[in-house]
Image (cartoon, rainbow, N blue to C red; front, side, top):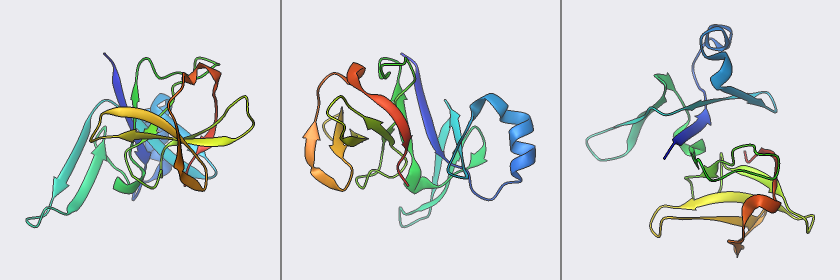
Length: 138
């Protein structure tokens, strides 16, 4: 099973990054996100995060998202679910009901669900084939 990670790139010369990783970069609202299979976290002695990398590029730990190969929208685009409880970095999707939902991955229970933007108490776990990715949660 293919698993991909995505997070916002920090502290990099974007021009050089685009030249090297052209097909692994997503640009959304002036922010650059790295997509890759290699994901590494360096922690301090107290357990807090010191650095986080995807494909060797330093990324913002708080914007991490995960994609499993079966998670695709109605246009066959990958859906990335936030690994943060607040939804940062997760895809914003639009459903047939016209609501905008955020994709979040529950690491404890190991499932993927959608939450209404601005209301993280409204969970939806139905089939994501009815969704269309429209952005990334900041």
